[in-house]
Image (tube, rainbow, N blue to C red; front, side):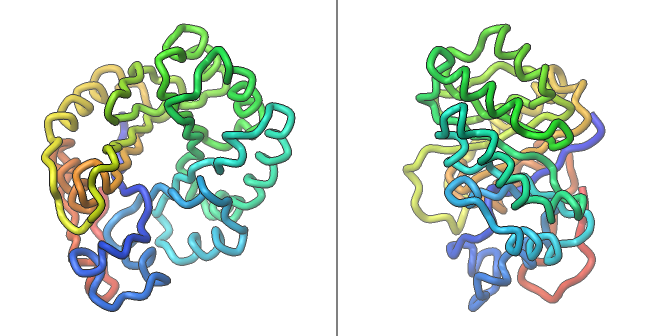
Amino acid sequence: MERFRVGCSGWGYDDWVGPFYPPGTPAGDYLARYARVFDLAEVDSSFYRAPTPFLTRRWATTTPDDFTFTLKVPRAIIDATPAEIPESVAAFCRAVEPIVAAGKLGALVAQYPPSFRRETGLLRLQALLTSFPVELPLAVELRHGSWWVPATRTELEGRSASLVWSVAPGVRPPFWITGSFAYVRFLGDRALQKFDHLQRDYREEMEVMRRHLEEEGRSAREAFLLVNNHFMGYGPGTAQVLREVLGLPPLDLTLARTVPGQRQLS
């Protein structure tokens, strides 16, 4: 594997004002400040509502040249019937075109709920896999055990769609490499409601994932590793711990609070 890229799921958290962003930071400045520290972000908001081309163009121009976005596929596509999916996918692809044109797209991520089962959802998944243009990198998060059969692996490999390795309560997908990259999401339960400091120590789970990346994941070109606030209580701090576990140099989190300067890279 050539490299690890570590980032957070989202950047627009008011709880980060103080510990990460300086007091008084307007929401419109969050991304620019986040991108002084990190070179990867997962867009969580696109799951709830597809962004407009105006918004994705602004994201692309706000961030440095080496910045990478991964975007969740909108829930409207995830929940659509097989017949509805191609048109909805085409509209979403038009919306993310500014990020693609800027060379900043890492992956599009189709997040299915734990209740999504193979016996009732296969046609929907197949429609999604065939609707996205093959030149767009795609990752698929499947969290129900009915999917862990050889046929699923074959279907994902046929599209070169990466299976998401979810680290979440009650979810343990197989460590298949079905695309050119590995995609890991460190998710937590919903018990934590305040996200301004680390509140749990899940370093052991990170160590386990590191070993899987070194073994089953060694054929992947690169790995995108995303952490959310719920995993350990505070996204930027969690990402810092993950970098340490992976043997990567620490980031200077204070860069988000100061004037723009040279960012540390992976």
